[in-house]
Image 1 (cartoon, helix red, strand yellow):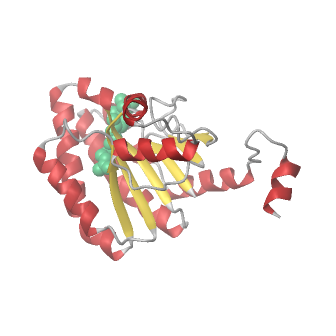
Image 2: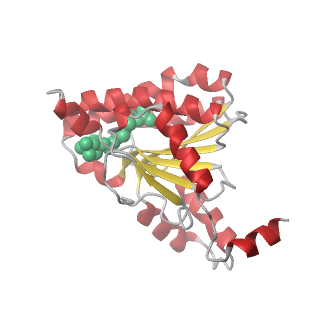
Length: 232
Ligand code: FPP
């Protein structure tokens, strides 16, 4: 199962407490740790988290720099935990605008965790679905199937190959939009929205979203009967 999360609400969480916005991102990084653990425990096989969008570069310099520092710290501090728990880390998005030391930490963690087989944790950094689709379209040589084009998207995104489409997309923070995230991969994703700000998002709420997903009737444009016949 592939779960993707738009982790929204860090800034408002901080402002509500009279704290600077980066404090919300720091609290959000703690939530990332907890939800990654919950994903492993719930046997989710792929978790893709929206950590920094291509448009986030337009935020105040102080906030961008705090987010980049946090990312770097996370990649270093989580190394052992990921290796011990069978978590393979993969950072998707552009890398040419990231600081060289951050790119080195990304490559190092990807190498160190490459054999993890319990959870593929994909962190989307400097990510824009539309930019990547455009790049894939430019660089692909006339793909004739969805699968071929998917390999092109994965290749331009620095994604590990063969990742299944998103089954469940969760967005926290009360907004209900996609924000240029995994537009191709979410073609048939089930959507679950939560009003909770990301730093307050709990393992219980995550499990409730998985339960909600399991109650949904996924038809992929067909009738329920047709799908159960095919899988029988
Ligand atoms: C959106 O909240 C969140 C982000 C732009 C950054 C997400 C980053 C983290 C959760 C922490 C760092 C990630 C890792 C993997 C260590 P917002 O700032 O737009 O919140 P707002 O809508 O309340 O302003």
